[in-house]
Image 1 (cartoon, one colour):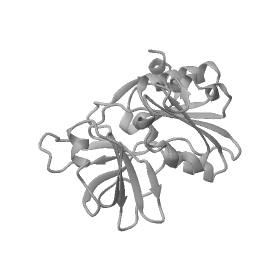
Image 2 (spheres, one colour):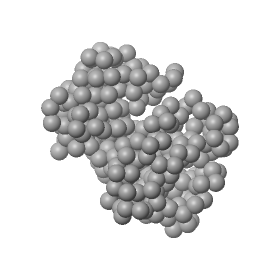
Image 3 (tube, helix red, strand yellow):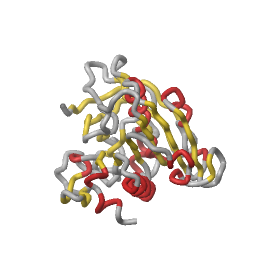
Image 4 (cartoon, one colour):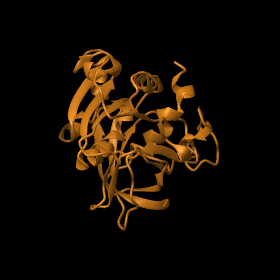
Length: 259
């Protein structure tokens, strides 16, 4: 069930020059949030930003009634959000969209592939999978080590691997050239830049592996009304905000077939 709620910012953490993390406290009974779902955040006191901003849910603590957002500073809206601090409030519509499939057998092998800001929803996913007995390999990539800001947070939840374009940390190259990527998995999950996700999807399809992608189309309303986030799938046009953002690649050949 969707809810519009004003959260209190319980903590704020700056993560390098481009990223920061907000921990939001509900104050009541928080709605369940599945890995891969997102929120729409109201940006106040910024006249250049008229619409809410969609942001992936990074982490959830149901017992504490908190959810975390990992935010990259890229425009007027996120720059305004970056000025918020502990004790401030943030109006949020949540939970939105369809998340990753997590009902898979214990003992299954999963590969989580994240690039840049696309690492954000994978932390909540990794926690849920580990709790259900899934063996996770987590492969995170970025242009440089400094652009993979929360990599250490993933270590308790699986085998953590890093790939950087400049070789500053881990494997020297993009994630799809990492040796671990060629292993066999029961399912692959990916979120990040579109070219990266398409390459992951093509590789998984060629090897007959199940794969889910979390698209990052521009989203304004979050509920499928404005149609600005529509993407072409094998089943016709779908709204990423309402029908996704997570899609199984078995329905997405039209999308990943275009390099």
